[in-house]
Image (cartoon, rainbow, N blue to C red; front, side, top):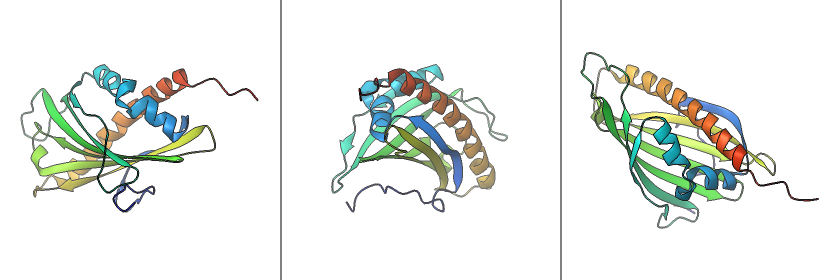
Length: 194
């Protein structure tokens, strides 16, 4: 439908590549159910392992006017492990993510708009990640994650914020990919009898 998150990935719109064409065991529907459905517990487990604390994880709700797109809100606190320029940094930051997902035959996509509330210059930018997970055959998927940094206020640190954000997210999503593969492999249904 017209209000749906697209099933294609525009690399010009999301210039920073974070994960490139990585294999995931299971169909896009299986990936969604095991990793992104609230009841799976994967999000909470992954965040807890990283020292983060989820403060809100709403249910997926259908976006009005869409056929395949749902939205939810995810909020959590995250440890801050770096110094940002000359600024003093809090030990943790509140993070808010507004997520949209599209689940349709042979495809799962996620777009997340991320705001870091307690870091220096956090009010100057948002990060939008785009997850593209099409089917690969009947029992696998291919994951690509890209992002863009959107500046809502002017800052001389634009280049540094963009490059550091992409670098940090690449590291985060490589850890996520390892945990996701482990969760998906451990939860795969037995093969159907011939």
